[in-house]
Image (cartoon, rainbow, N blue to C red; front, side, top):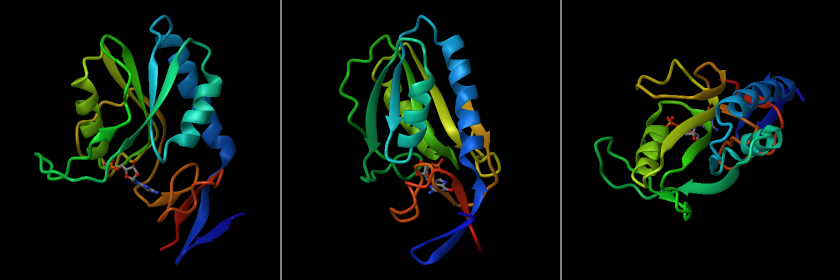
Length: 178
Ligand code: 5GP
């Protein structure tokens, strides 16, 4: 399928599944090396990260756990204007190594805010793994420990990412046709 239509927009194939899975292989290999003996808790930030988390977990050979969290749509006011509350992290994470699993880092706002909230729960370390990173969109100083691949600053769908709820099921990534 080289093109898909979701609602009112057309998308064209931009990253095939094989390339995505090679990127996941690389991330898993790095994690298997540097998280050995750390018994990390992988924290999958829903919804978009479910496919990345699934493919990654299948490739991890170190002892680890996984938990699933969401960011509320509630907006309070903070220094950034919008604060999304992390919900669903019910484990005691004090003293643990946490690895946040993100689908995509765009402006970086979401991940910076999420890391801050996790840090307040007293973990030993918080690492960030993102499947995709848009370096041209991210002007903030974000520490990304694991990046699947860098991508251009275009709107994409597939591999867990949606357009108004649709397209999450696509195994490849598609870019919007302007
Ligand atoms: P940030 O806070 O880094 O700007 O944005 C992160 C969130 O925005 C992601 O978790 C994702 O939900 C959404 N997002 C950013 N870029 C894209 C994109 O190209 N496609 C889709 N479907 N969502 C995106």
